[in-house]
Image (tube, rainbow, N blue to C red; front, side, top):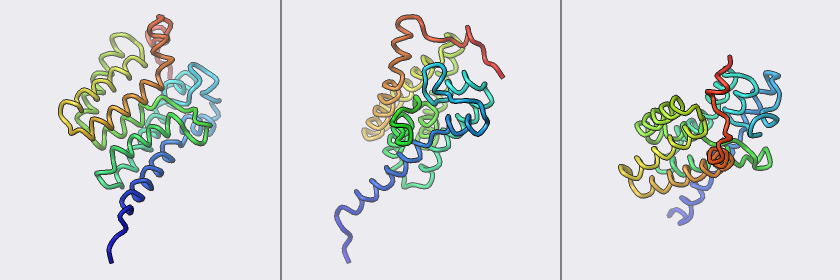
Length: 202
């Protein structure tokens, strides 16, 4: 019996849908509600991501949210065919930024992007994390550090990976830059919040 010609396309669509739905899980809201810390959308830039949770509830809760957002992208990739992993990564990050459960208003996509890179290109992730740490320590701007880290990962992918991987990383980087468009505007104007002015709280 021959397989249907579009069977592989349907399988990919299924995996992409699963990845998008996993990415849409709003851990930033779930954890802050369960721990009775309020709603992260009421502070800072008004999104559900790790940095905003930090502003609302401190570093411990924000670390919990980061790990949850990291795992919601990493775990689906662990249980999927290798050739689907990067497309699924794009779908998961899109779900985080445009979650169906929150009227498509989510986070900035950095934590799930770290999960995707850890599974698909771990050396690139370590290089990106190093860039992130250096920029954050030098400038104090979380947003700038995240953008520089993602841009560094994209450049490394373009230099050392195949065309399809580069395209996927370009889409991931574009999504994260789009999600940070407000931060980019504030960085240009010099009004972006800096950790040097607002140090880490417990």
